[in-house]
Image 1: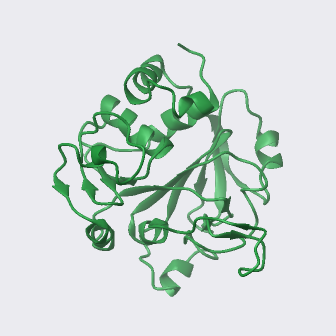
Image 2: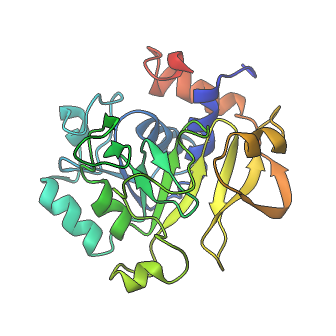
Length: 257
């Protein structure tokens, strides 16, 4: 039970940041799995919001899309996308999980295009969906992503989703709430946070068996580092049991780790 793969590690670590009684906007995949693990182990009153309108369901099994009927199962409300986004604008959403093809030192995300020509990109990506809305108004944004230089870039090719934009004070100048912003980035190598003074990404803990040099080598910009960098606690036997037996028994996610 003590052995685990990278996907299992990221899901278990991400679940620990979700607090009981809070509201989290999740998509499908690893974010949903992390929220379900948290509900089972330490946050039974954690409420999940889904972009298509599912409010606080009691998920019987992991859904395959944000509009899956399971995202409404025994929920408090079956609403719609407008109501979910309005709840974010009202300040009701504590956490959101996001992803993207690129992330920069200020936590800005790109899920639109790769390349410097929007009309003729190297790669065209799906775009924002609700990511811009969630990152603009949720109190804290979390990201689960593999770490390499293609993803962790000095400046995103296209700003799909705002992090701290260009640094401290930039969100306020852009008209976004000052209290919101990126919180934790959970990768297959480390846990990254953000420095309060500069709003730049910093290394907070490294996963078991990973060196600081490896994290630096797989980041396309200079990471700030906490004075004392800790080792991320490994997934516990109970976390792995819940993830494997209750959350993802068919290994749709963790089988890819």
